[in-house]
Image 1 (cartoon, rainbow, N blue to C red):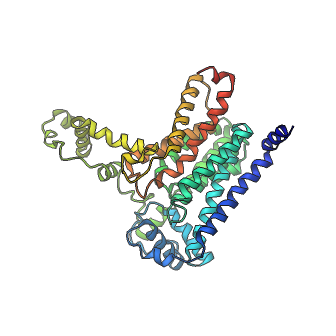
Image 2 (cartoon, rainbow, N blue to C red):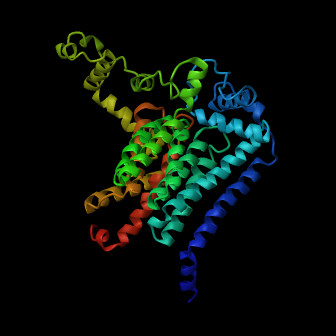
Length: 417
């Protein structure tokens, strides 16, 4: 009897709501304990030359005192990559004064909110008890991967994780419940997300293709709504471009936009001396195709040193999966990431095997995971300050392990083993 009543209690929606709110409260309490005494360390941060958190702090203070155009950076904004995060810090400095303590408190509240938002977004996709297990796992991931290392630093991933969690909440609820307001809010969140983590720009473009069929089915009103969605997405993605134009008369919409993808590859994956580039001039095919010399150089690199070329990206993939010592022996293995990815790929295997049509929300999440990780692996130093760049993607990979557990209980998937 007690067991049945307990299971009924766990299955109630309000139980999940209370536990999600409890997660937020726990992060707040842990933060206050960790910060005690509440010392302002902003001046210490401002003196840490060469670190991203110092630059963010400088620009945040500059925005507060000198205006939204951030005049301290006299030219186009190039780095650090989290342009929106500078304004996040500036807004806190305006409201609470130039103090690091409110920043850390708000970042940890946002961390708890991110956990709650992801749970509230996807709990209807799984059984109630599975949802609570998912909530517990989200809490542990947030504690081990963000609270421990990053939520007490001025790093843009703290904002990016919250923005992407809020985006998917508004996006999925908006389209499933046909609420235009939530749909447009989700469109407005993509811009700040892109300007916080620029590698999400690919997902922003793909998102337009994801929502297009939904709107086109609605005829002329749907076309107008689609144009409004795209316009809001484009407008909120243009703030850096507007800033650069007003200050420098140059329309550059992303940090370091003047650098191409190939420039980033050259910077973070240089061609080794063992590759003989003198063979390029003697190659008749290269001359006929009029291929860029930089691209030809990497073709030669791939042809002459295939193991060296592909091992570079294989190491980055394994790093993303939690095999972190493969890039730097100072890092530890993250077994919870390895289990998460095993669950994700197992889910994909059975999902493809079942040949079920993907719903819009699932298409969006899968493409977010693909776009987010692929752009990082190709063009970014993903071991920068540890694994911070990967944090805005892990919770959405984790989701599918719990969806897998539920689906394996169903007749159609359990017989696939």
